[in-house]
Length: 332
Length: 288
Image 1 (cartoon, rainbow over the protein chains, first blue to last red):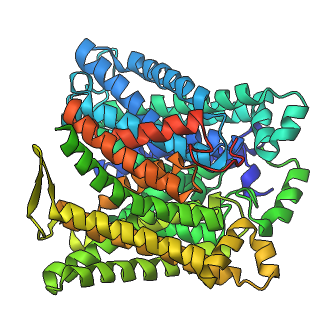
Image 2: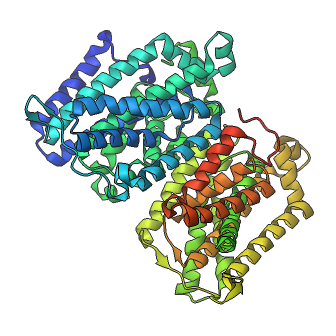
């Protein structure tokens, strides 16, 4: 069994159950707020990377505007929570809905383009959203950002420590991994992969190309939106600077390093790239450079990433391996 | 006021054009997109800054040094990132250049700091035109840009290497079969594009009296927007796109709000890609 085929199921529970157990016990053993905060951050990036993987990895759409939807989710939650005192449990789905609506609005005109042109137009939208966020002061408070977003609370208990947030993001991660593995195992997920592998063939067997692409895009933006809401309530302060193109590139790096088009790749990539610069303390000042260097090295020497499908980003050297992988029926 | 904004816009647009033409050269010959071009321009600007302030050199020498820095960086980048990635599609080289742009920007930020660095101003004299004025510096900058563009055209149309570039752009395999060293042509094309980017950086530094590590990002994006206007493959289209973006930006500052200045380039980019992805002056090519 190759790493890229791994999906948590009942028959391989001996692998993932102990990992889950360790994660559940983690905050009990480790009391250090800083380390727990790194854990929460890793959880946030795992969901972001899984979401970007839906379009860029599974469906083969090169979308580069991902941080905008993360920001839209965070701002939806921030504005609802600070102005209308809406609790987290409602801002969370609301952020998903709003990000999803923006996703539809942006997908409809852009997804007719392909490849590099899709990448460019999504970057264009990304920057437009950023500049509007920065300048629409009456709604977003512009460069001042939104402070004082209350932490989530449940039946009188307020999620204030990083331990609480760690459990919350862990629960979200488990939920998202379950949902994504279900989607990708379903007919819908297979249509995504069919489009990535060969659009013409996919269309020929009756897959509605455009509608499926829009669906893929929207699922990905909803994931960014909900995790944006989590981020807003965790950080308690948001500003437009957190949702720039650089953020998209960070998530993209995690996706490439982990491996596109697999369930396990984004998890590995996000966790590795969040923890690695923190663990190697002397590197944490150079975090971004480390990301850039890792991205360059991975593309040059292992383009499919740590757990990727061989040849996923179309390098001929790996074409053979990819064909073999397809025959194994292993790309899910 | 309108004339004044027009003058300022054209100056600014001519500076965007230097970046945009670089994208066109790279896309035109290699059919690839680079994301590190803005950072090449930033490195050129820093080179110019050091030459002008630290070493007290005259500005033409600073300009030459910025161009040389761009050339060297471009040639190196082509060798490292693009040569091993030939024939693998758009994405791997694009991703590599994202990595390189991050490395260059952060490295400059760590070594020289993130703040703006002041560049001394030149040619402050102004010429009165009705109730607007044009500074000597603006004339000098536009003159240099025109000279660079004319020089590039002469090179592309009139020299052996230019002919090799045009042949490679049309069909690099056929060109190679005719004895053109395609690797060398790609390398030179990348170097030329980066040289123009470096020149743009130096001139921008002088024009705005400042350089900074983060100046590459927006400039790169505006260059992109401008060359999408021309369909990614047309140099006149990229120049026209740059001038239009420059002028509209200045009108936006004047009549709408200064905060929305940078949005113009992206609006143009999105609108052109939606309505006419092959660009307004671009040749017909498949993008959808």
